[in-house]
Image (cartoon, rainbow over all chains, first blue to last red; front, side, top):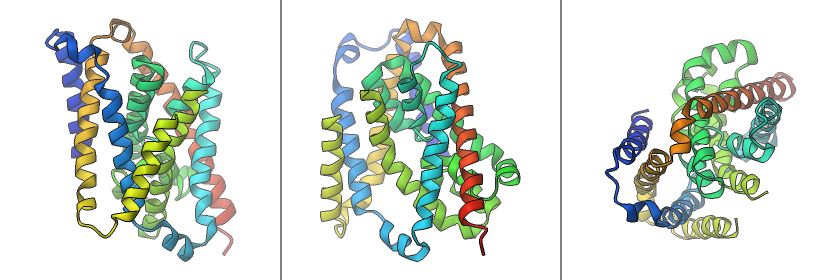
Length: 200
Length: 89
């Protein structure tokens, strides 16, 4: 939670500094961001490669646990595709790229900015922050109407960190391992889906 | 796309090979620093892009609509998965 606020603070600091014209021209026109981005993806890879073993969890719960990230992915893409019809000025692949952030707003917004420009990157940032917040605020309602897996699928890539506490509280501690596994799988899929849809 | 996949796979390989080294424990913290730097840069490009600043309300609305769709879709996914795989005991 604290980290999310720090991220937002830095983002808005950047916005304000640029608005006030306090940023040197050279920084605006450079492609530093692209190279830092590749570094970021390399680090994400290291985390996946060295992280908790997904196969151990798979053995314990069986293959049906894979159905949850699958439900998250299919449900999100379905919902976003439907919504793309009421936003005619944005293409289907634009909308799917934003949806494929699965609440991982930092990585998805940076990737989308790189592929599709600042405007869609900002949509992605806001949309995925809202998704994380919706779980933090609405988790009890989600459990009540959509069952105990609801805050997990809604939480997307954040179920291994920021939304884990509310999931534990409202779905119960039986769901912690599922949430962790789900978060790792979705986390891993975000850069792949986003770059896939953005390159279409 | 190619570079992105390359960067991730190289990372996974490096992470797997170094998984017993203590350095990998710092990946998370380093990652947060890099994310902060990139979000700051994204903020700068938003602030210096008049098109984004002038359309901020429209952008926010699009973001809200997409969030609503994606989140609701995933909630129905949860309901389906729960019914199908977690209540047959």
